[in-house]
Image (cartoon, rainbow, N blue to C red; front, side):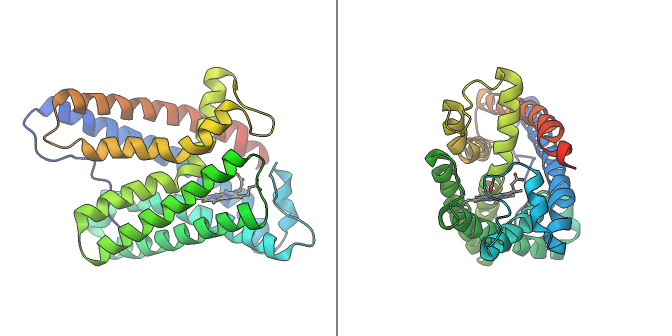
Length: 273
Ligand code: HEM
């Protein structure tokens, strides 16, 4: 798995290059802070009952379909899903730290394999929970998250193929795209909170059927993917104006992510710990 290359190489104009690099670093740090909070919530709320078999404790938090008495298969799928959720969320951050790849390449390789395995389990298991167990409120949410699962499977396969062929530049690109879409469920929570704080919850329906719900059902993967694509396409030969514009997009994203993550911790996660 490749690391995020925060230093786009080349280019003679130092100032624009530094702004892009700084804003990419800020964006990564805000994602890391938010995803560490999400990991902490999963470890504290879901791990103890899932590992001890006290599945009924999941329902202390509002869920569409968490623990269901008389549904051992569905409950086991849910348990596997939340256990893997912490692995992928923490593991993705570890993969993106350049120093780890440089100093401990074996850690990078094994964590990369674990990351791809957890992506596979979460995408296939998530599709099963959605369509076979029937865990959905509105068609847009179900279709949006299923599209995300398909993107995870596609980008994971392409990242794996290029790593095996030792095409590391292409591998790095696919892993960044994979990271963007594998973070979609976290982006969705952060997006709800940031929007709730900024717009007072306008467009959010009681059954996740409002205009904002429908927008976010698809934007949770496509928006981060779009920003990743912009970053990947802004190379050393891009015009300074383009580099500055992408720097502004990344810096704005960092602020939105910080606000949304703080909101998610305070309103969505901490009340249940
Ligand atoms: C790849 C990264 C993923 C992570 C980190 C993740 C994480 C989680 C977590 C933490 C929960 C528990 C609900 C909560 O407390 O908010 C959950 C539930 C669920 N996830 Fe995922 N998930 C991922 C991918 C997916 C995908 C791709 C799908 C669908 C295709 C999916 C479908 C579901 C469903 C249906 C539930 C049950 C929701 C409920 O009952 O309210 N997940 N997931």
